Length: 188
Image (tube, rainbow, N blue to C red; front, side, top):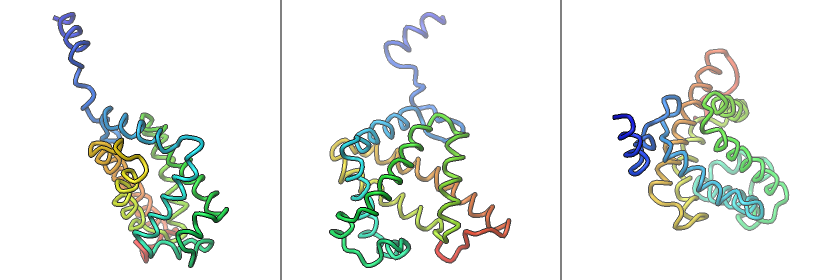
């Protein structure tokens, strides 16, 4: 019977592609959708441009966020597209997202990375609201930058992943509040 199951699995697939990882809740198919779509955005010649456009879209969609960045206060979208500081920040963020994607199969490392991102933002009073708004905007960004490759399944996979990430951010925010640390709720 084992041999029959093995042959069946090799012909029709084992069904494991839809079994969620117990740590992240993401299925192998969702992880693959995230990884493949990220590869389109992370191409060396385009990553900075995609990163800048990510921030332009973020600030246009959620204008309350732009003043949080002292270097970008009052800048127009065109100013942001030409600003060298924006180039640098965009690259840093894109590489951070890339690190998260690279660690989708290592939940422990993924949590450590998200906790670091959370601490860095929460300690500057950038609360969970920012992360939730980013999660809501990200599918639109994917469509704008990856076109037809940003299928509904790809968008749903990213939304699910960012939801998982945000639950870790929320846990970090709660931990910081209980410990009397930074990360207050004035903007969350």
